[in-house]
Image (cartoon, rainbow, N blue to C red; front, top):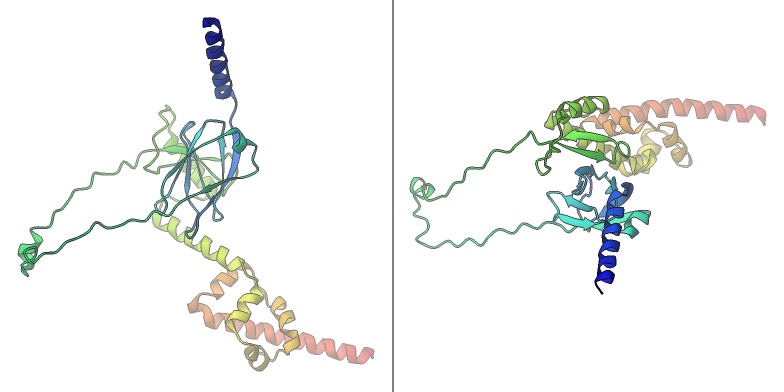
Length: 283
């Protein structure tokens, strides 16, 4: 009986050691939610101290192995821990659903004795609290799915612990940030992220669809002298890059967009006129 028990313990220990010695593989996943944006959600492998960030579709890539614990965190969602299984390693894409974080205010009861009407006296009754300073020197290695799989970047999210190595990860992270265009200025980063999201929203539709939503058929026919049957062809002729279109669609650049369409309409009118003359001569 004792021998059987020893064999069982030995078998379990061997399996455990084997699973721990197995190299981590890239796990591809996707974060889904009922309503909110799933971009820039932190995915942290607690077992290896490596993190990743989801892209605008909620997709992420991170190295993991069986029994590793992934931690998902974002301000708008309830944090979630997930333990990797063998099926997750073999799956083509791991789906993780996050619930929206609903913050409810505590009930406030106001009685006649609570307020006196004297602002100076009432303000003294308000309790104030001093917030503890945030440690901005914490660093962590994490992988960003928006650049390339396995690319490690050094950053300083306050919910990650330092790696504890003797290497100056902060300095390395700054250098890598310069290579891939990451700025240290939070305002510039926020502006860049907003610009990228706006450009993505614009790229969802074609140039022709944007123009048809913005202008009526009457505008193309009467103002630009484009035949109704040639509107689609004209919009393909007047098409610009996504970056130029993003600038044109700003409210303050409405006049510039119209000027662009008028200019293209004039050249389009001359070209179609020449084509009509050539067809007439060929006949």
